[in-house]
Length: 82
Image (cartoon, rainbow, N blue to C red; front, top):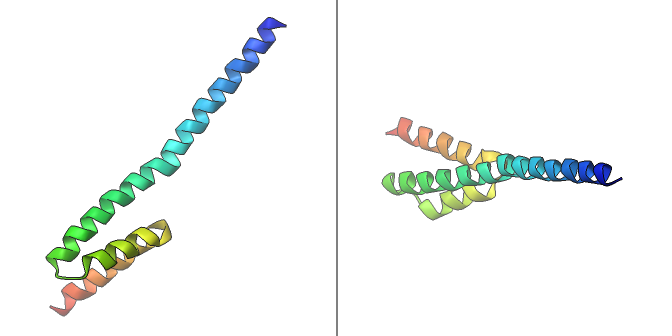
């Protein structure tokens, strides 16, 4: 009886580790990437004399990095006009 309870606890603790690891991979890493992308967009928009705060908000609010892709498209169109 004691052995079976210990093995159930061991499986449960391993499952918790896997859940925490998956949360780190699928939530924390994209969030950190989004922070670095927002910092890069802010610096690049300032350099190009665009409204950096608005672009950072667009990048931050839109899901799945769509705002970043839109910024890159706008930036490319801006470069092609000059």
